[in-house]
Amino acid sequence: MKSYPIDLVRSQFPALKRTHNGKPAVYFDGPGGSQFVIGAIKAVHDYMANGAANLHGNFPTSRETEALISQARSDIRTLFGAEDCEVAFGPNATTMMFHTSRALARQWNEGDEILLSELDHHSNIDSWRTAAVDNHITVKYIPVDTDTLTLNLERLEELITPRTKLVAVGNASNGVGTITDVRPISHLAKKVGALVAVDAVHAIPHFHVDMQELGIDMLFSSAYKFFAAHVGMAVIRREVFETLQIYKLAPAPDSIPGRMEIGTQNYEGIAAISAAVRFIASLGSGGALRDQIVSGYKTIEEYENELAETVRRELQEIDGITLYQAGAGVPKTPTIAFRAAEITPSDFCTRMCEEHSIFIASGDFYATTLANKLGIRESGSFIRAGLAPYNTMDEVQRFVAGVRAIMASL
Image (cartoon, rainbow, N blue to C red; front, side, top):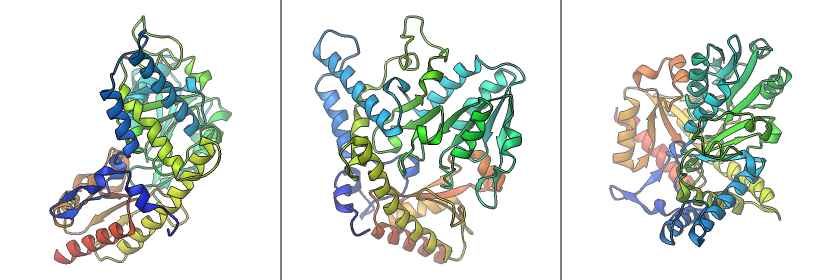
């Protein structure tokens, strides 16, 4: 904590200067989308101010657009341990999953199976499920243990069969923060020749994700969750990517990754990606960008985890607060889900905002299956507070004090 450069970090996020009802705003809504680092903001501004252009033009603004896309692709490749040709950009992770699922489904046959997860955001459920239903494919689920808030992998060897074509699982739960070790799942999937798709949207702001280490074929993420802009990305292993028959315009590129990048892209958003990657790297050390990224993530993890553990410890001592979290031995992102007695999640969040200037959110956050299994969806699901590298221990104490004040008033 003492060595973490929190003042330097906060100076790079202009939104932190905002006030609400006369107090500094506290952004504990990171899981829904982070604030934007100044380098990303500047990149968007510079691209739009200095002359924008589409691709393949014989003039400087077009060549500059192609160069910034190439740089962003290279940085994402370095971030995830992929190749440049394996990185495709698009509107958001959900859209990219749907594009991929429709293409993959053209290779599936009746009687084939896919395996999904009950813990996941529904982007990583419904994108694959709907394609499977359309093609008469059997859909199975890795069950969530509602007591431990982890995936129950005891029957995994039964669930993955020679008919399994795809296993889709999240690297971290955006609802309750549970981090799932993908490696044993991908290991069993590979034994039967199944592809593995990972939703890394909630993971990427908090810890390093390496596709090679996880042994996966596809990874999906969104840059607005890690300090940049609203751009989605699909990182697909070359051998798989080249087989995908993407629904696209006939004259559009058929090479990879171009066949996935349907229509004109959000170039100003793509321009922001490199700045976000370099912000993470700036918190690390090493000669190569890759080393700096890995080291930077370790710095972020250590800092965020200390803040999150303080929040969890304090909330457990407040009467009327029920935490939804995996056990102490299970890795978690700094995402804290809870409920408060005698007040709805929505009203609780409103009071935190208007009385304490702290921004948190309520709902199931598209982790709908999880909320249903817990029996809380009809009553508003979760209250969720999520931390980011720019949050402080003072903000944590303000948050805890706000929770205590609301509970004492009921």
